[in-house]
Image (tube, rainbow, N blue to C red; front, side, top):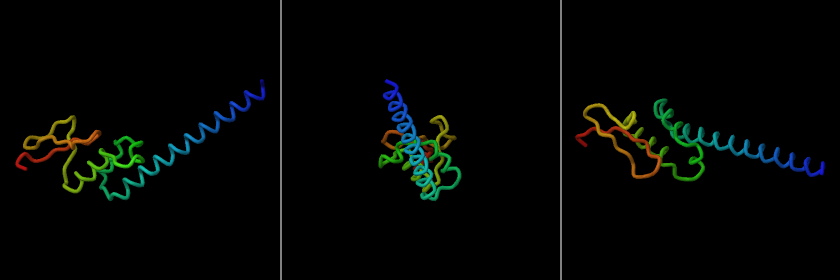
Length: 105
């Protein structure tokens, strides 16, 4: 019985360590993608708000939206509202950042 408890404890410790390693690599990969995108500080902060798990799953709507709006100099909509003369716009994918676009476009 005592031998079984030791085995269970060792397996649990191994699982916790493995989870920590996976989490660490995922967070490091997120930072790598953000830095590789060449975003300025404003857009880096927006990208860091995107869910980290989606960075390793291929397409990340949130991150791709941030990269796209950075290329066009757009700003994120605060609370889905924009200053006068701008309209809130979101990409048609889950997790997209809502951004402000001039109304005359």
